[in-house]
Image (tube, rainbow, N blue to C red; front, side, top):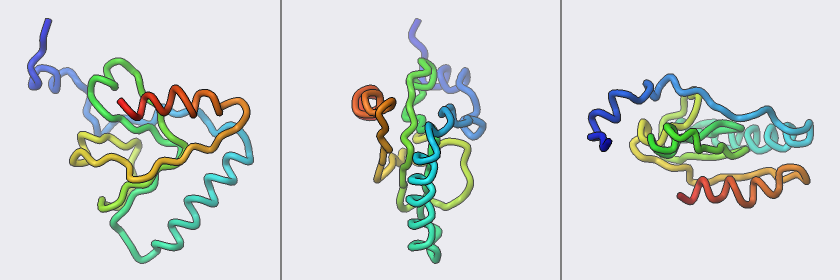
Length: 125
């Protein structure tokens, strides 16, 4: 059965209600590294309101990806030229098609293979 875009949209959840689906940070070192990244950029751009920082937050790239539950979130991402306000996740189609300008993965022995392969493939689709 082929759905029209309108039919697909009607069965999709309200994107403003999509929550991040990311697991907890792996270690206290991961948390400290993430905190340093976020804190430094927030301080450097303290006078600006035209960016969003996502930390351990899911990025929903497409409705198909959401339907298939085929998504991964990076440890850190930055989107420039957008409004700075709280979000439960980054939903590309609700953000005027804006993708992150920068994505950073914090590697550890137990996550390196997933981060270098599975997450990279999910983002490049």
